[in-house]
Length: 281
Image (cartoon, rainbow, N blue to C red; front, side):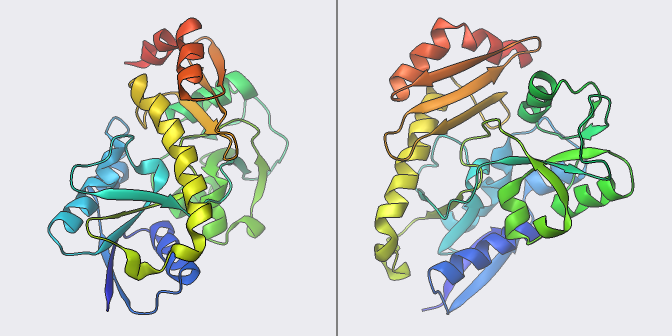
C-alpha cells in the first residue's frame, strides 16, 4: 500500500517527513507538498495571522481524501482538534530555543536580535535585557542568510529544527534556558481513518507519554484561551505531568506551576496571568 503523506514544502517540513518515514520504516510512500496560506503570509512578512494557516490547507487534503496522513510541527497545530480529523504526537526532540550569532558569541543587550515570535521577543526583553529586537521573516534558511549578511547580530530559532536540518555543527549558538512553546520539537501526525498499517505498536509507550504531556499543556492553553500567537511558554513533565511556564506582559511576567492542568490554571488566575495574556490583544 502506497501511503500518501501531506506536508508543507519547506526544507524543514520535508526533513520532518524523512525522519518520520525512517523511524517507522515506511518504504512505500508518496509525499504531497503543499504551500500553505501560512507560508504565503509569512513570506509576505505578515505576523498577525493564525498559525493554524500552516495546517488548515493540509487538513483539507486529508478531508478530500487526497492524502492518508499529514505531518506537521506540533507547535503549529491549534489546541483544539479539527472535526473529523484525529491527531497524535510523536518523535519529540529538544524543546529548547537557541540564540544563533553572526560573529560574537557573547550576548550584549544592544545587539540587533531577530525574531518574529511575540513570546520570544518578550523572553529576550525580560530574560536577556535585549533592547534592540526586530522582526525577521522567512524559513530557517532565509533567516540564517539574513543573519550571515549582517542584517542581525543574532536570531532566535528552535534547536530541534536546526538538528533536523543538520545545521547546528556549522553555527555559533547558545542554548536558551527559558521554557518554550507547547509542542516545540515534536511532530504531529493527523489522519482520518485507522492508521494501524503504520505499525506504530512497538513505539506505543513513548507515543502515549508524548501525547499525555502535550495534551496536558493544551488543556491549560484552551482553558485560558491562549493560542499559538500568545506570549506564553509552557512545559510538562512526561512522568508526572507537572506543568510549568511563564506568561509575558509588556512590563512584567509571571511564572506558574501546577501538579496538573487545574493547578496550573489556578496558579495563572491567582497571579492575574489572564490580564497579562490579554495585554497584547
